[in-house]
Length: 194
Image (cartoon, rainbow, N blue to C red; front, side, top):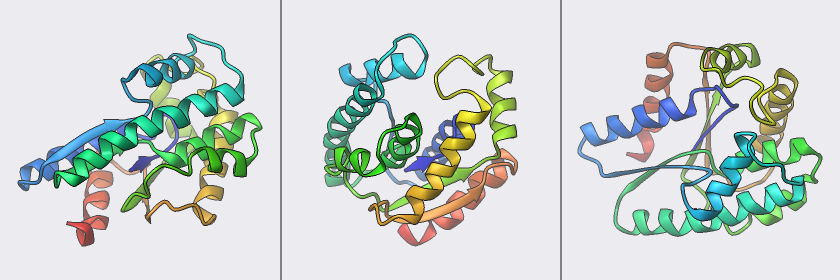
C-alpha cells in the first residue's frame, strides 16, 4: 500500500511499481482509494470538493468503500496476484482524524480492512506537495489541498505509523527525491517480499 500526502507522488509511484512487477513476470492488480465503485465515487466527489459531507459521513463512506475494496484485494491475492494500492487505511487515519474525528473511532471503522504486507509512506515535504498540486491546478480545490491541512495530515500519518494499527511492514521513502530515486527506493525496500 502506498501512502502519502496529496501531491506526494503515490499515484505515480504505484504505476511505476506495478510496471516494474509486470516486467519481472509478476501479475499485478493496481488499485486506488477511493475506488471507482459506487461508494468510492461518493468519497471521490468529496475529496474533489464537489460534495459537502460531515466528517463522520466522510469517514463512514471511506470505510464502506474500503470494505468493498478488501473483497477485490482478497480475490487478487487468492489468485496469486500482487496488489499495489494507492492509499489504504493509513489515509483514513491521517485525513479523517485531521477533520477532528477521534483516532480510535476511525481505527474501529476500518478494523475489517486486511493488514497489508507492507505500507510504503512516500514522505514528501509539504512545500513539494503544494508545488506539485499547484502545477496541476489542484491546489485549494479540495478540503485537504491546503498547506496547513497537508501538514496536519503528515503529523497524523506519523502518529498512525507510531501506533499499533496493523499496517504491515512500514517503509518510509524520501518523496522529495527524483521520481526514479523514489521508485528505486521502493523497489529495493520491497525486495524481501518478492
